[in-house]
Length: 171
Image 1: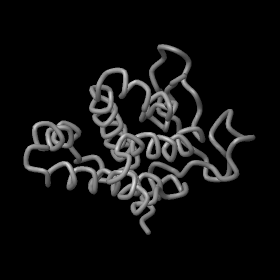
Image 2 (image 1 turned 30 degrees about the vertical axis):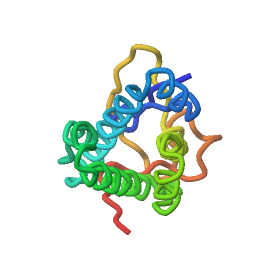
Image 3 (image 1 turned 45 degrees about the vertical axis):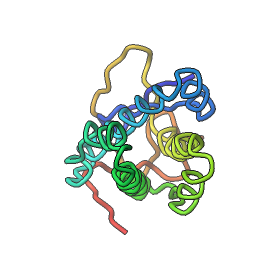
Image 4 (image 1 turned 90 degrees about the vertical axis):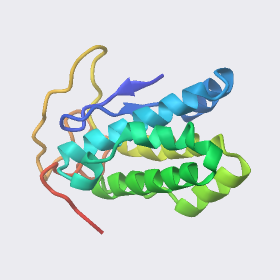
């Protein structure tokens, strides 16, 4: 079951990785494109909240257009996925979470392409679960984090608090 969390104003969604694969198969790939757009938008919103200009300036629509109709030229989807994984890794760095393996994404892309969204979603879920869950239909109020405690309601899940959106930790 998917649900949204409040990442200090951004509202990323925790999704079941197997559900992403299943819906992509059932819809003959359409959900995979929708998923790609939505996750790119979540990364953009997260960058806006955490004041990362590069993430905030990304364009989810252009990312999708690189896949469709860009697949005709072969190169645009590869560049789009490369940049997408870079954005995912940047968000994971900001969130002090384990980084998605770019090499594993490459192997999955070449061998079992449909597994890439599930792998990426699984990694993002690890980060998103550290934030408080939003009630059904609620909007995300901006929560000022405290640097010494985990996000509200997440004390038992997080060993370290989510990063402060004012910090733009780069590594």
